Length: 127
Image 1 (cartoon, one colour):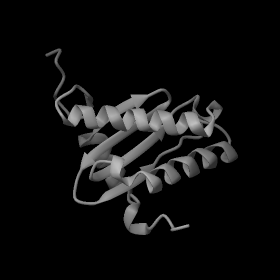
Image 2: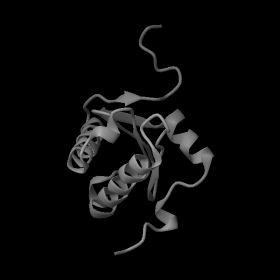
Image 3: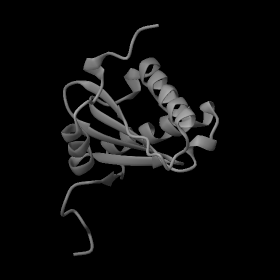
Image 4: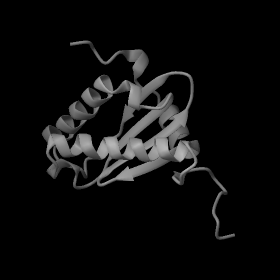
């Protein structure tokens, strides 16, 4: 099985912060996917301790990495950060993959003109 190469990972905290600040995100169930367009397809996974114990968090990360490896064509070019929220640990692996696929589909739909949540500063519609 091929490794999850260093060049395909988001490693620096600044890169995670850039995706959060300037990226676009979508949510499906307890899975949030944020993307900042760019040249390379890179994946970052941010799993909080609130999600579950170390065994559960590592299982979720393995499922996400395997999904990325098998479905790189589904991911948009750029930095992609996957953030499992509370409740993700109770999902079976199949449900995690389905939620991830749905969030990605929502992002791709938004890229084609649909609506998706933006993380840009100052784009509030309230005022």
